[in-house]
Image 1 (tube, rainbow, N blue to C red):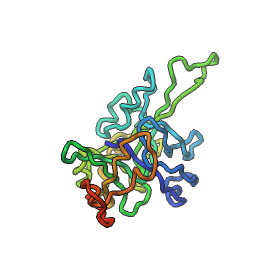
Image 2: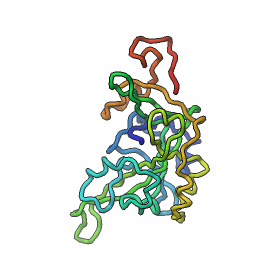
Image 3: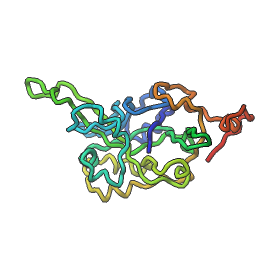
Length: 247
C-alpha cells in the first residue's frame, strides 16, 4: 500500500538518472490521492519527459473520475490481468519520483502512528507507475478530436520487505536505477520479464521514522508533515533530547 508520499529533494544527479532535464521541484511534503504529481514517461517523440498527472488511475472506459480514488495502487501480481491496468502495463509505464512515503501502524488506544519511510542516504527514488488518459463520454468535438482529457497514474505494490512488514503487508514497487531503462522501454511488453522487477526493495536501503499526526490531513502540505518525532513525543510525552526512533 502507498497512500501518501513526498518529493522535496531532486537534484541534477537524480534528473540525469531519470533521463530528463533537471527542473527544480515544487516541494511536496504530503502528496495525497487525486492530487497531481510529476512522473517521468516516454514522450510521443520517443524521448523522456516530465508530466504532471493526477494520482489515482482513471481507466479510459470509466464513466467519470471518481473511480480514480480507488485506483491509487495496483497489485503487481495481478496487474497484467486486471482490465483497469493490463493495457497500461504493456504500453504506458512511468517512473514516479519520490524521496519518502508514509505508512501507519496501530498503537495502544486504537490510534494509528504514521511513519516516514525514506532511503538511509535520503536520495530520491522511483516507484513503478502506470499511467492512463481518460476523457468524459461527451468530450469528442465535432471534428472527432478529444476536446478535453485527464491523465492519471497508479503506483504498483508488492510484498513488503522485513522492515515494512512491521507496518503493512504491502509496499510500493521501488525500482533500482538499473531497471529504469527496461521499465520505460516501450518495446518491452512481456509480462514475465516485467514481473521480475516486482520485488521488495532491500531492507538495508531504508529507514522508518515516526512523524506527527499532521500527515493525516490530506489538505496539509508543509514541512511539519515529514518532521520525525523524538522518542518521548512518539510515546505521547515531551521532548527527549532529539533522539529519533527507527524501526
